[in-house]
Structures are given as structure tokens and as C-alpha cells.
Length: 490
Ligand SMILES: [Zn+2]
Image (cartoon, rainbow, N blue to C red; front, top):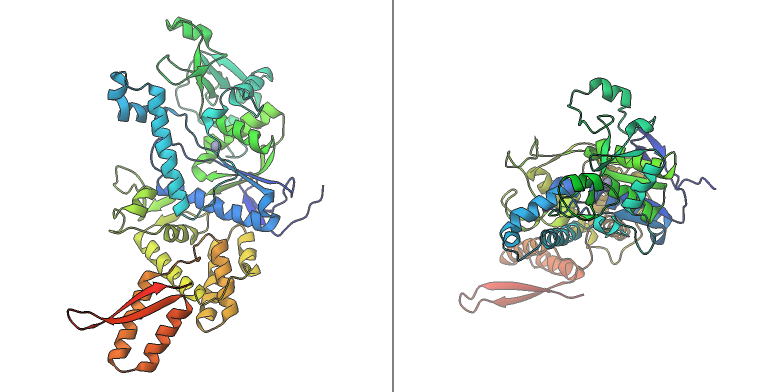
């Protein structure tokens, strides 16, 4: 195996160090990122990993080739929060026998997943290569891809899981190095444990792989829990559903194999979610790692405070895009995208109106400069080099600002490079005309005309034409005043 680096360095949570990135197989670089639980519209904190790992995905495609990167982001469509939401929204229909709980759940998850797709598209994110839904990976599949029940079965067979009180639990004591990612070794956890221990658990850290469902709850035919099912007075075969963590172990193995390159998500997922994913995958497959590089983005605050519904500063992506709830106006998706990337992904970010305004001004300047290009050039090496340094988006943006300055001074090559860089980073420079900027230019031209400064007025007209905007002068029939309309000619 060749160990050739393309210059990419990433901070690995497993080692707490910035490391050279070596893919297991350069012809198929593999990345998994934990996706949304589809019970409610995604909030702006959820947008951060989606945007950050989209930039990493674009960078990997640039370095290794677009056909040589596999990016998997799951959709969690089985979760008790989803059940609760379905009961809240469709409780009356369910009680009246118009809908079953499972049908209500499907309505909740489909609506929420659709909105999520609209949101992330507006944020300029590429769709991942695969976007599996958890419910499709619970039972053994006809295509033989890894499923949750088989994974739990092998954990039991290998002595890493046990059945108790209708649940299947992961036996943390069976894994001597449990806790490496979060640096919470088991002995420390035990020493500090003050939480009441569930009596059926061997150890307080043991976590649920599978639990029994009641006949009313969503459930799948369960190989476990017959005794508890019967004891509860229910007839026939038991039904059960997976715990929180097992789905990611199953779906990552299904698409990326037992060991893959990069696993990403928000900082809040390190413990317990990612720690437990690692425990499940490593113990089920008998491997020494699950993924070689673990990347985590930092927390997000809103206007200096932790985002929470009770503080009234909880915002969904949809609200920022389509309502005036944040700062009294709607925000374009790419302004959100740029604002999110102005802070290094590992640092905490304070999401504020001021930050969005700053991003909007920057983006407007970049686009004005990129519009001067006659075509786009390849993304400049300096931009790639900054991104290769642990996704230093802030430094990459400084290169863009420099290119914009050069472009506005008439450097066509700089304009073309800037355009290429913006396209690469997921900003739309295609045929987009900045309407506000055109209106501004028209107002300036009208002022020059009033001053009989024909030279300046013509210069503005020609500049707009070079950007594909054709002006039409006319007179308002009522007032007789000069009016200027425009259309895009490309
Ligand atoms: Zn996950």
C-alpha cells in the first residue's frame, strides 16, 4: 500500500493531534457523517456539520477525484422523539382509527426529511453519495448489506452484549479500551458515577442496542425479549426497536466497510454517540479502529447565548431562509453558508445578525469582482493549500478577498480564479445577477446623467453590459421622468 499524502492535514479527535491524511484506498476515500433525526425542522446548529463536511467532501473530491470519494450521511427516522411528535401532531387521527401510529410516523419523517433536503440545498451543499434511512437497515436485507439485528447478533455471539429485561445491552466491561475517543476510561467513569444504576445493567455505562416495543409502538420482529413480552401480557412474537447508536455502525459498514477513513459530526456527539458507535463496530468486526480520522465541529451559540427554546433564541434553518424571525429579514442560504465558514470549524461560533451582515457584504464584493471574469479558472492552489491545513476556511477566504481586490483593479485572471474558487466552495456565481448591486449602479448612473457627466454614465452602462445586464432608458408616461429598466442578456 502506498502512503502518498496530498498535503491534507486534519485534527483527529482520537489522537487530539493534527495528522497527515492517508486514505485506506485512494481510489475510494470514505467518509461518514451523522445526519439529522427527522422529528423537527433542522436548527442552525444542525446546519454547521452539514456545511463543514460539505467543504471537506468538496476538498476530497478535488484531491482524489470526484468519482473516488464516498460520502454517507444517514437519516435517523426511528427515534422516540419521532414517535412523540407523531402522537402530538396526529393523536386525534390515530385515536379515531384514521391513521396507524406507523403511518403518522411516516408522515412526520417524510415531511421533515423533505424540508431538510430543501434547507441543505439552499445552503449550497452537495448531496452525499448515499443517504440511507435507519428504518431500512433494521432487519436483514435482501442485498446482504450490514443490518442492525445481525450486528447485534454478532455482538452477543462474541461476548460483547447480553440480554436483560427485554433489552439487549452492550457490555462495556468486555471492551478493555472503551472510552478512548472521549478520553473517559471506564474506571474513571465508575469512580465518578453517582447516577442510580438500572438494576438490569451489569455496569452503569452499558448502553441499549435493542429494546422491546409495546404492540402500539413502532417495532420489528424481534429475536429477543420473548419472556418480557409474554410477561407484559402480550401475545405472539415480540416486537422491538434499535437503540440510538447501532444504526450508524450498521449503515457505515453497509456502505463504507468495517474500517473507513473519516467519521464526522458535532462535538456533542463524541460522548456517548460516537464512543458507542466505536465500541459496537470494533467489537462486532474485531477491528482495532472503526474510522481512522474522527472530526468534530465546535458548538454554536446565538447572539452570545446557548441556543434554547426557553431563551427564545432557537432558530431553524427554514426560519432564517424564509421568515423574518432572525434580524427582521430573510437571509440567502449562501450568506448563512459563508457566515458559518468564517469561523474555523473546530472553534465555537457565535451566530449573530452582525455576522450575517458581514458575510453578505463580503459575498457581494466577491461576486461583483467575479462578475468581471470572462469565464472561470481552476480553483487556485493557494485556496486548496489553506483548506488542506485542517480546513482553514478563514485563511482561504483571505485569498479570495485578495483576488477580489485584484479583479476590481482590472485583473481578469484574478477575476476568473475568484470565480473558480467561489464555484468550488459552493457559492453560486453562475448566472446570478446581484439585483441590489444593479439597482445601485443604475441610481449612480442617473445621478451622473442629471449632472450631465455623460462619460461616467456611459462607463456604468458599459460595465453593466459586460456583466450581461442591458439597460433600457425610457420616460415615465405619467410624470415624464426618466426611468431605467434592465434585463439580463447572456
Ligand atoms: Zn452516528
